[in-house]
Image 1: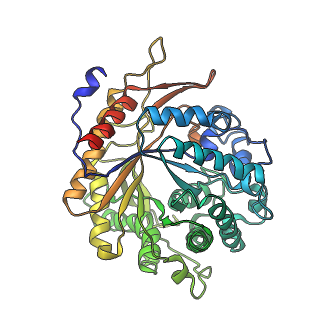
Image 2 (image 1 turned 120 degrees about the horizontal axis):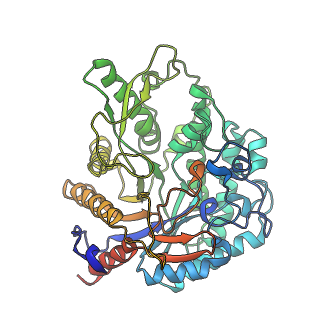
Image 3 (image 1 turned 135 degrees about the vertical axis):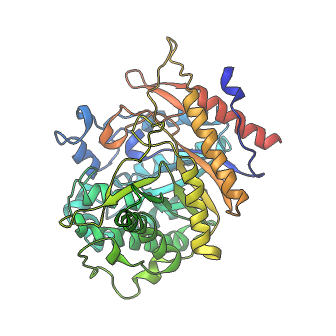
Length: 456
């Protein structure tokens, strides 16, 4: 392995799951094959000016055609589990109606391939790729989308639930609502500001309805959770106004999305938005959202820093840079492994016995990888990042948080949303011209870490 073998790694509990994660639009390609319908990301990425360098996911990593080789590679790299998302529009081209047999068959073959290699399939039903037909009818602003989502969940669980037990209806409702609907940075590109609340509520309601649908439709046992993007917020200065802004930001980034799921109620929203219409909340919605979970997923990348917003701003806070310089990723994000421990301990302290076992459903890093002539990347900085963040998980476990596993983002380099193909998060390098996959040094380190825990 080279020098990377010397990087210290934490000892994690027996049975700890070492996995990787991907998302359908970021890797699959084949966007117009076998009955797949268009999604908001197809539309958004082909809109001039939306994506860096005009890139899109039409081919991406061509995983749709190369899935068997990719699964064999995962097996070679010793992964215990693989978290992937299903493209809703492969199952229902317009987000409703009869299921598409070819779409169901693709994911059935993928699941069978994973199981044949001893890898546990972990399924996300929605990783931001709303079918365009549903978006045209209002998307997540339309309450009807929650019912369509439950129908889709029922179809998939009924078809795969004899072999898949680990389910998460939603990935990162915080990011999809804020970047996709409040700020317009992601698809579908809406700029709603504080008018984003119905999207937030409908996403969470869809999660609850889909959870019910999975449990009622799957022919086998189910373990249902959610993958939440979480980070604690810090004030930019000692000014009391910035401290209040940090409290408001944390309420939005964490409690707005975790309190309804784990407590069946929203926190005080008046601290977050200056004007807010909550008429989207109907009687019994929160009881539906708060379906008991078998596990809870945390996606973590960096901490938040904020300052007080000017009076004419729709929110009470404005994101800002960390007050002190430090190491950054290729995305410009502060490297802050302690922030992961902080999030996990915060969840334990806030929810106590209401917090189910936790998985880190995403954590990873983009660096400016430099391959050698053979395409190999000696990414010691990524190895150090993973070691530090797994160490942060160990610290949280020592503090009493029941963390069961870690899914590295990502299995392979892929289409990184509005950033296009520039950021490389993968343990495996992808040459987008040839589609050649080459495990990086970090993939070998992660393989050996997982193997040591199985034999130790």
